[in-house]
Length: 222
Image (tube, rainbow, N blue to C red; front, side):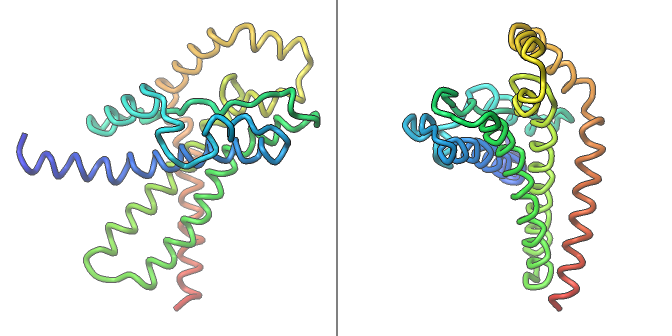
């Protein structure tokens, strides 16, 4: 393996995997923080109320699949972390689990919005050879967060979307979804492999809108 290959691998991991890892950890931290605010400290007691990737990492979903996808330029880039533990017996409100589940996708939307402002600031205040690289890194981080938010909102267990929908479904429906979770997971995997463009359309559209917002902010900073 030549020096060029090492540099290219390092560039890909720094540009794609590091932002992905942070977005994933922030997503899980948000679940645990809202659970704590709702009265359940299980995540905190198990050391999951942290941004340390080692606390959230799943060997396959956090390390192997994303890194392999990045190194081989796979069009199917996805991954996951270990679910944050929540004890429903510590919750008192009917919609507590709804808010705990929604916190994950909302945290990624929040990061995408913060990145929008950072892109505007970088456009105005960062010049020279590093400007293009920083802009690309920020835009990649924005897209990753929008993708994680959209992916996790798919209304299938064990994704956040399934838990978000749970309070609004009849008890029998929720029981069926839980009992057939294994089959639904297989369906979800097929969905990821076959419908990548389905998620790409709203994600890239959303990223384009946020980039327009960043341009507007930058123009008003000058």
